[in-house]
Length: 269
Image (cartoon, rainbow, N blue to C red; front, side, top):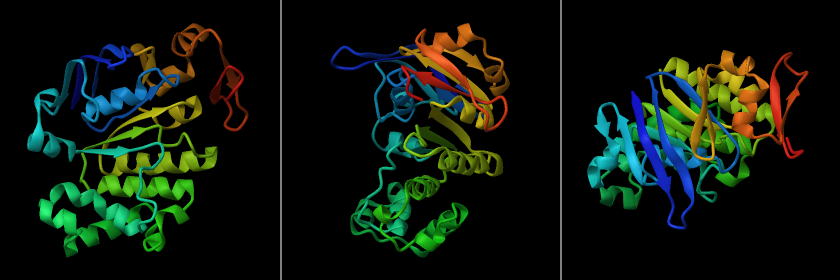
């Protein structure tokens, strides 16, 4: 279980990204965090795995306070948290296979990691991950030869190499079209259901939230302003919607899937 207790993050320039944020995530949940750009979603995810150090508060992961860990203890704790990035964070000139197997570097002695010497078990594991994500046939291509959706699947396969218990996905479909966005979230849903992987994912679009989440948090200006299930999102009142997205936001009822909704901010979907 993940417990976030009174988490606050103030950057060096004085920007307050998170203000006294507290919530829990049960094992096996698919939690989606919604909110405008700048609401604190990315900072929150990065505070969870200590890519960003919180100013105050605690991150408790399976009973261990990650904010108190340093060095090797922190590295070991991070192994249980796979990270998926909006812009994929791949080594573009390296092959798909090399990008995926790099997810095992944290498990190797330093000298082996520097030489890139992976054992047969790691190679087999990388191929299995590629098969699960449907891109085994792309293994020897350069990463920059793949489409955006395929590159994100490489990112997911790389995260799986850590044998994670939780995946943190920071706007994983923000740069993808709607069809590919559903495709990526279907893979995350598969891992959530088949492997009981906890997923904590930040998203913009409410139709995706309604389809894939088991629970939803809404952030605005670094504070939690909404918490509910996907059913609650479907029934969200206009005032609740504006609490998250502001008075300038408008809801648009789409016709693709009946009652699914998107949102528009300042005229841009």
